[in-house]
Length: 257
Ligand code: F6R
Image (cartoon, rainbow, N blue to C red; front, side, top):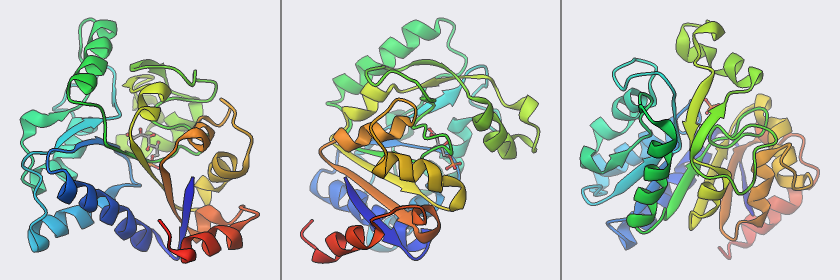
């Protein structure tokens, strides 16, 4: 795991955007794995800026989102399809036909999940997966105790996640769908590179468990310790519980990556 501790979310997001841009420059038809939520917004803003000012070209890029709420139509203001269109896809030159997000209205959710996995495989697998982390250590909607080898499937959201995500549903946690389709932990681990972002004190316990804790399905993100190319970009608040902060900064400053 490579840890980058930054003064704020903006500087962390700029570094993460650089990794994404480098990949697209080297491989114009790269397959990105994307996340929603508050965390990646500055990353998407920077990629939009790079597209507008530096000509970063998304025309051949393909993308797969981590998850979608079950039961929400794409047109719902809280759907992840709407989120991605409004915050990213509508602002760059990606071909929308190449942007894949699980269908919250899939009639046969199990078959739809198997097709999603198959589509990822058929496109050559995910080159770079962007992740946030839940305060309970989830990645995607893989909540505590999710199997490390799970594939895309239907997930039950944990009570903490319902509370955390109420802000996208007018503050009412009763309006947050209880179920979602999510890539599995195994699906995420298959990505060739992982870029995880985490900001703020509310994420500090999960970040501590992910980086310094034992690998345990109790903090699902801790499995990233086994990934050969996992890059973690956090701010000082998210890092404040880490015991070896100076060491992580030392390694980053050695500049060998
Ligand atoms: C989003 C996702 C989730 C979020 C996590 C953090 O597609 O899969 O795992 O990354 O819940 O959410 P925010 O960024 O809103 O704190």
